[in-house]
Length: 180
Length: 180
Image 1 (cartoon, rainbow over the protein chains, first blue to last red):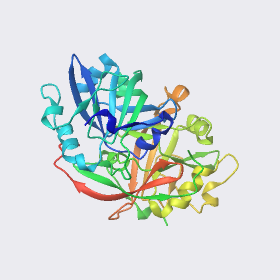
Image 2: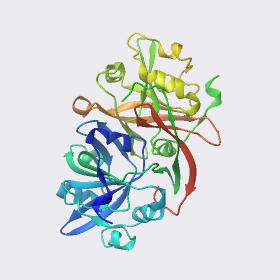
Image 3: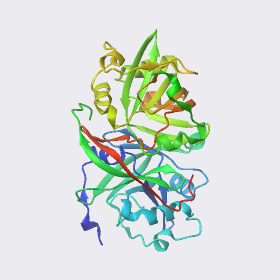
């Protein structure tokens, strides 16, 4: 697999990926070592440039890495990757190479040092925009600087419901909404 | 309908409702007038007491009301309420009584002035905990002070995908996650 499997997604469409609330993977790179964690606490904050707010516990290895490098990739998995997603959530990158352990393939990003995840259907390259609430709430505002998507009809994202239960994305309906 | 249809939900379980990313309604009350808006940009920020971060545009009528009253209710609708959810998103409460217009029934909350929505399957009474990022990002940190749930087997929540498309919650799977 290479980055050629992905096409560039206009930044103005990024909100359509994150707004339904999927579980995501978040990758970082520090001193030549890539890491990946599982995350469910995120929200869109602005359409364009896309801003994403997210909570990363200060007990997670990623917290210090993100504060230091100010770069990460949000990768969106589908349910086919469920075992890997849960594996990344159950372990810490402090001592474990999670990419190797769970058979995830890192691909070079274009604008940040953190890697894309080849198996995910979308990858969002991000820089930390605002860390003012990081100390108090472990809350980071990220700016998406480049977005990649793997063209496919249906992306069955996973949505965490706590304690190992996940809702899998169901059918899509259309309604006469005037909301963006 | 009355509040008797709801049972009290332990605050420690609130994250299980919001983490999958459902579209929610947000009610406020100002000078004896109730209002309700539709919202998709929210994230859990803490388990207990439950903190919820959310973005409310400063073009929305609710923005000023929330800044002034510091109280609201997050009501979680299921897909049966899709028409009302979209209606509340397409209109402004500046001049319209949306509860009356869309046949939503307000019920008195126990800890805040904003009303519950009788037809929703869960209602979370909230107070503004932190508005430091309200000016810059329209971002509010809410603290859930009381939670109500209507006992039911399946709650088919709606998840916004942009421009009138909504994903409806699908099947639930269980995995050996050690994450809360």
